[in-house]
Structures are given as C-alpha cells and as structure tokens.
Length: 79
Image 1 (tube, rainbow, N blue to C red):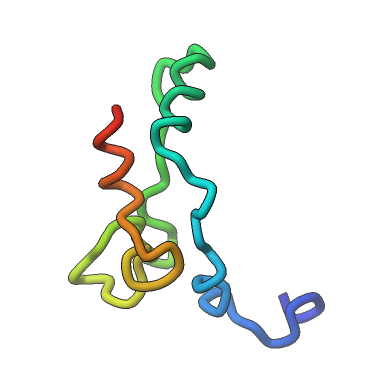
Image 2: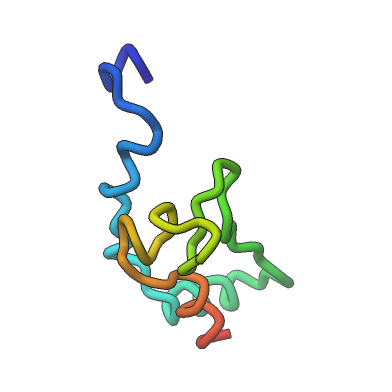
C-alpha cells in the first residue's frame, strides 16, 4: 500500500467503490448458466464494511459510502 498508494488507507478507497457495472439480474443469470449449484456473496467484509444499510455499521456500508445503494437487497430480489 505504502509503495503504490502513498499513505492512503484501505478506508480511503471506499468512495471509489461505485458498483456502477453491478447488475443483479445479469449476475444471477451468469451464475445460473454457469451450472453452479450455489454461490456466496460476500455481504460483510472482514473490516466490517457491509453491502447493505446498517445501523451498527453506519457510515461504513454501501448505502452511506461508495455505491450509495443496498447491494444485498438488490440481489435478494432477483434470486
């Protein structure tokens, strides 16, 4: 990190995470066509960033920073 990103922390990159190309319908279709029997969406990262709005992870979730949307909620609607 220090060599390539000059003092930026992991948290500094959250605002750059936009999920602009994430299409839950297309994603579900690809998983289905692949023949996968199941898949696991990482909905909470090891450092606590949640992919849904969270009262316990305020300001560190996909609704408050980055994509500004509920990634998990969108996913549940298409499966």
